[in-house]
Image (cartoon, rainbow, N blue to C red):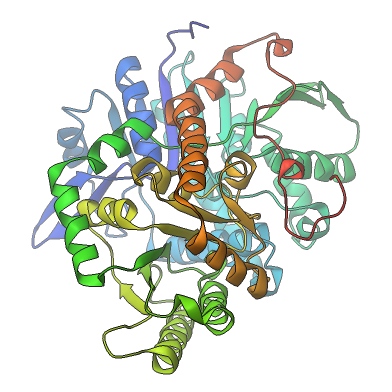
Length: 498
């Protein structure tokens, strides 16, 4: 399908550049991540616009700096200025003390402070005002993630006719969890002001539809395809699932470079003739790092024949280190690593290599390339791109141990070992299964994973969302994707069919 030549306006909490103050001047460089990789070429081809916060709370007009940074990109950047108080209450507060834990089924960690909700509305209104100031009537606005769920409602108060899409990168919770939110009705009404709402998986879409049916009156749902329609108060909203992915070719090609190969050789040279088990995670309680370490400890206890034959490299990327809860998590991780190493270390062999810092690009790809086993076991995740990045970079011997609660499991279950991260015994056995897996089975599994990721890459994700946005006849969409629902996954211990 040839898409209309509309200008695309991307709106996200942060701009695709990193702005840092260096003395009396500002340093700016390109950001990283799948969203930037996917959307930058689309914006460039359409002369697009990206709106977001710079990351700075200083009272400074950085537009001139942003204009200079955008000269070679082919699209424009517009800043939304936030105060320290707004960042504290909207971002650290409502977004990350309420929505983040709640949508990851960890409601006991929520802080339902009413001031957070007010700040969230105020900041979303500020984003909406900047959007309306800089858009044209024929633009298509694509808003991203849980920080900005109220933006469409605020835009409707200023410009009712503009087309607005929204994509949620994190999971959407089931009804019994969502009901814990004091502002559940208001948030659903705000989301229904978008023209298209996208989720990572069919399960997320079903959770959303169930919440809408339960809480909103006079709702009519139509369709059985990948994109369905919701009719509410004379508005028609499209709702679909669009699993995000990576730039497979970019990761694969970069991992094959001499620089990455040399770095990978150095890693394995220092580890010796041992299978490397790799975990790479941002410091966050949803990533299941503590549970993973306990499972590795259990594997060492149950399967002593892996002694001195495996090394577990756990990389933790610093995140929100000024928040007490994250400081405590770091302390717990490091104490557990120390206890396990103290218990099992032998001369010439330390079971866990622990790294607490960000990796360079070459280091990241080298770790992917050199590890025989990747452990991607979040307690809950919208998608989790680490699993896909590992597959794109891994050599043929790689095995993926993947949480059934990661959105990626719906796509990657045919080649990965699927586990319940809460079940220490099951994960320990999965480690041993991966360790003992014959080369032929490893090769077959990894080939299946790579083919799926290559076919459904980040550019397919962009195309599928925009096609849904501009397609009038939704019957053109398939009933199901090849990897749509967790019921397709062969979960250990499962006896039913769904």
